[in-house]
Length: 253
Image (cartoon, rainbow, N blue to C red; front, side):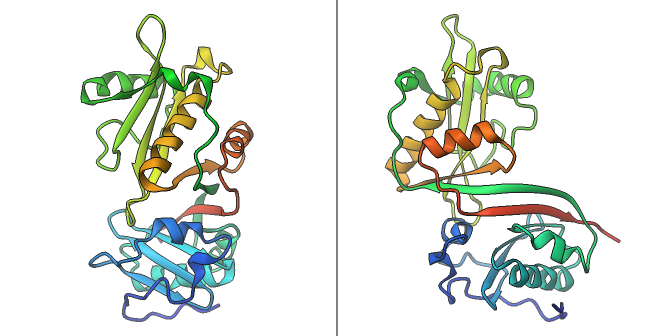
């Protein structure tokens, strides 16, 4: 594998038909088919990659070897911009032969085209609005301090929650969006630590999935690879498990 410094070029991510192959759902759902103005991307040799320039993040799909080649190309072409990447599992080790890689986290990108079975507690789910943001932030800070998305995020189109009999939130979650394509992404689902195991998270997740599928035809989410309870829940809800990924940072010299 060689990383050759070339002038950055914008490639057609869809010219290889990768989006139709198993393991490439991140391309199918995560990259806009009609190329956004200014998107920098690369493709070839059974892989495709595109840059979220604001974050310095390269997204890639395909075989680990080919994906690693594109990540390396991006890092060498744009060394002052590219700081991190998400790619097929195993790409981190290949990139690590050439660049210092840190903060490796294994994920699964999951998706469904189907509405899940109705959960009995879905009737308790309510939509939340700006007036609830302060409460949402306090709830997430207490019960899910590593949440990926917070109230007020520009990427979030909907917050939903379940309230206890006395009024305060006991569960919450959001429908955010993947930045390049705008595809619905379920995020920051959290349950009161004292009420876990009561099906609140399952009800909220089912409701959010149904909401997204009815409006967009599908829903996506990120699941940590070692989160067994979440894996069982998402499998019950019909989410496909075909896209193991790894995320990592490229250490600056």
